[in-house]
View 1 (tube, rainbow, N blue to C red):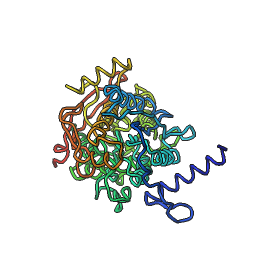
View 2 (view 1 turned 90 degrees about the vertical axis):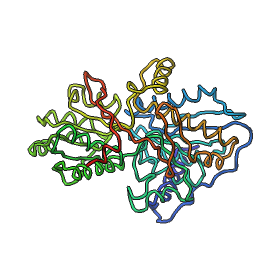
View 3 (view 1 turned 180 degrees about the horizontal axis):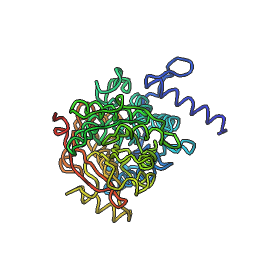
View 4 (view 1 turned 135 degrees about the horizontal axis):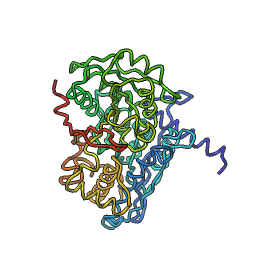
Length: 423
């Protein structure tokens, strides 16, 4: 296939996805999205994941993929008479160094049209889910995300007025996630700050869907519980800027106790940490789970984040998991000879849930798998007992707050959604 042809195929895929996501293509019309293909014959079933495998997020997503592989290994890649094949897809590009809308759109179209694919594990980034969800929903393809946390993807009344309906053009639920959403994380972050006796906060975000959503929740909750928000709500900064010293100098003059940055490692959270130190801004820094990866510490420099940064994360970090969670960590270390990052367990749980759905469906059929997902959960899994609610969200609501000590993440506290709701 010529390069020219590939470019047109990718352009078509993006138009399809964006039309389904409530955006318009250049012609202003909607491009029909793929419909569900006829079930494939035989007993081969494919599970694919779509995660950023290029760029600094690769270390985190490698542990997610390892978690998925561990779950499938334990089942010997078999469910009943179905033989499972797993494919690890990249939704990032070298030109962006992060997830790429064109690549994610192409992945979604590719999955929608492959009759052997029954489950799509992803995405890592909420913006990527926003693109692929309508395509996969039209195709009747069940999606399980180990990491996309923007509330508007699933919860009515938490995002834009047309969310989440715009991602469900068929009206059916096909997107599930095993990680708590940001409406919980933002509240818990603000509540933790209050508990620590910090009173004055400045709130920034990176301009992305994920960063804006969680920063807005943090800022709104901070005001509700009596913290002084020095910024005008959540303020956007350029995630591609070379440095932020002028911004940090302005913030320093306001004497905040904490700066909150709704961002990921890939949207320059490390540079923000560096420049806070560079201008002598002594406030603490809080960042969300998109920075709960070793790549963030490396980007910031350990000396700039030791004992001064707080990172919120859904559930407990690997070092604090008990029971089946600790067993997962032990098996992970034995198989991969490395430490799992924070989201590895969510990859593992997503893989286990995919297997449970296939087992419950009992046949190679997308509709049967979709129906099998309703009410699915775990009674004694690595994350404890939980189940999916009517929106496709996990019932888990606990979050942890972590810091950095001696260049490594260190657990600080486990926070509950109930505590976050307290005034």
